[in-house]
Length: 194
Image (cartoon, rainbow, N blue to C red; front, side, top):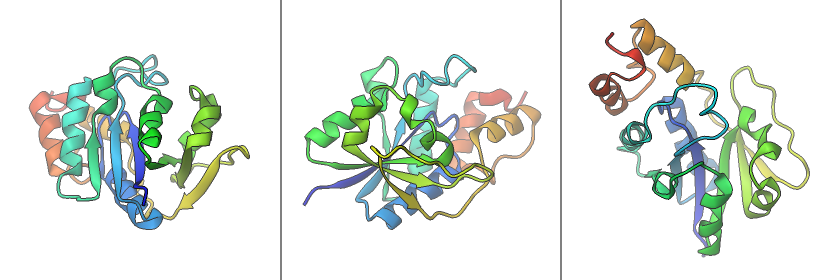
């Protein structure tokens, strides 16, 4: 029987409890063997618009976020590959190895799928699991995408808000796990401790 794997890709700048909830809930709702939290090396759709924490820091935080959650796997395949990050390059080898891939996205990202690199080929390889995001209109995908909705607790947390709170000296321990917080503190990320 083919393995069923979710790919929850992201910049994870930083990963937060909302990411963890989506990863765990996706496994349960889609009967997945695991959800891989795939850390983007160079997220080409974001890197030109803002400063991003170093890939190694985002990787260590993602490992910490996954710790203690047996269905979550911190995956560094895109970091190891280097260069700009394209989901198709991550998915193709998995499908070639017989893995059934579920691409886990929020409504905001799902609405932009047709702008992704080699999106037509990607649509042939994955099923998209769409998670509602607070205050985001539900995505309507073109017919060529196989998609399913994932019912998940709505946690109104964003990496943008965590970064803002760090820079403002506001608490974030209730938004990120203790391991993630310890990396933010140790590396002084996002203006923490300044």
